[in-house]
Image 1 (spheres, rainbow, N blue to C red):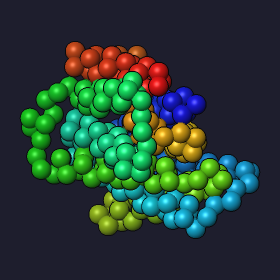
Image 2: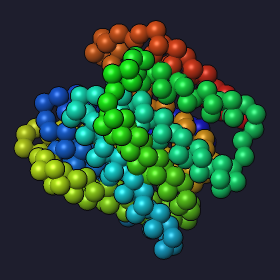
Image 3: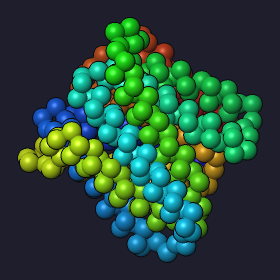
Amino acid sequence: MVVLLSLCSAVAYGLSDFVGGLVTRRASVWAVAATSQATAAVLAIGLAATNPAHPTVGDLSWGALAGLGAGAGNVFIYQGLARGRMAVVAPLSAIVAASVPMLVGCLTGERLGALPVVGVLTALPAIWLVSTSGNGLLHADRADVVHGLLAGLGFGVQFSALGQVHEQAGLTALALSQVVSVVAIVTGAVAISAQWIPRDRYGRLGAVAGLLAGTATICFQLAVQRGLLTIAGVVASLYPAVTVLLAASILREGIDRTQGVGLALAAAAVVLIASG
């Protein structure tokens, strides 16, 4: 069940990034981010309200930390997008986002079988290869690398913190995390005097990306409440493969040899992880 839920999370995250990427071509990236996260927050709050839960103070604290991580991750990933260097920022952020929960899972005593370990180790290069054509770092400057690392750290903290929320907490802590992430994004936009209020229909279309992102996060929360953080974090971080496949099939963007190898490794990683 954890692999299936994590795969659903990866697919929804990939769809969200695809939609968000299209919308941000005609709207402020900050308006799209704020609208997206606000929509995800409404979705999470609505589902949490209809499902009785008993969160502890600890669960809510982890939820708040997850929100700060998600907010920071979005701030840095969109700053990277604004710089036009996503060929560097995206793969770095995805790798770190997968590595942080894997490390936290190992430190908290999670143990994997032989095949899942091979799958996890296969997934990391898969994420990198599918996210970039392979030459992004050759022309990267320090700011690009910093944005990618900090974005990945933010998302990694989000995944890891949600992994500490108990099942009896339901989706309450997740709903709190979504609200906190909206506050963090708006604060980041105000700090750099960026336009975060959607002024046109393109900005408001960020709500579609938000519904998808919210669904992805809910699937991830359910996954880590039922299985290992190590597995859920790595599988959910395979979302760039979904975005690349959508771009190829809908926008007719080509898949180069490096990305093709990454997609093959991603598929093999899922099979190996599920075999455990």
